Image 1 (cartoon, one colour):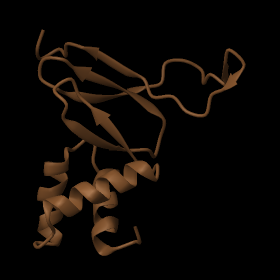
Image 2 (image 1 turned 60 degrees about the vertical axis):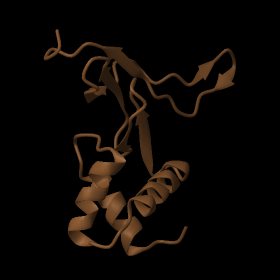
Image 3 (image 1 turned 90 degrees about the vertical axis):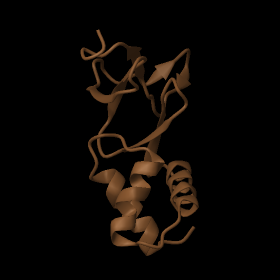
Length: 118
């Protein structure tokens, strides 16, 4: 997929977002700049950006996909009641190897109940 105005806009939306938007939320924001963009185009671009390693896909317990930038290494907390997705700073040192296998990347997702749902 070549760089397009739509692709650049969607990447900008994800990189400037702090709330882990869904595809529908990205679509609504993108429509403010490009009114004729389709939801299908947004999904295709998001999937392509995930495949290319430009953004991250976070799947919640209710199978809703949220998207996140990869500008800094961090983990996530997902509330199993309301679906809240929050950034969590990495707690431990980076692991380089496991059982003599070289580790290139690691995504940790903590699942629990957020303070609002307790």
